[in-house]
Length: 178
Image (cartoon, rainbow, N blue to C red):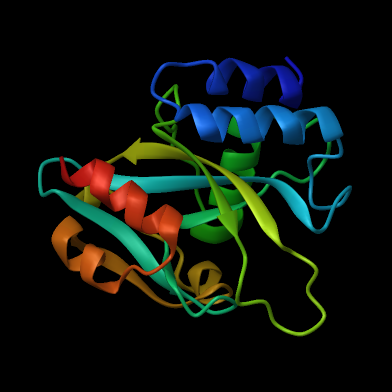
């Protein structure tokens, strides 16, 4: 399945806001969905570790943005699926891979307002997946995490809500808190 088809299937689901779906459809028609193809506007994936038993999430203070964010990244090659992008990014940022939920739980669009000089990124079309895990059974690679984050750790959803300022992260935490 192509990236366009994969996203069309996702945005057709009932849980996706109709305004978001409409904006995604416009963006899909424009084509060039990856950062390599369009550095200003591209598709990103977030993968959110959730320890359901303790109601905690793994979140970090991101170096480039200065915000508290979940792990994630850009879909890179044009033929990369969302799940392949997630697994690649997990390996790059965590040092291991863990299967996310089958379907995303949140589809958003983020305007990038705090951009370091020289960076062209203006819009992220974000698709977020939960990654259920038992926090006592995983060990994240601290060196890999340190390439993108000042610090990362497990925290209660309510605690993460106090730190989060990024609209997508705030929305994800609100959904997870229910």
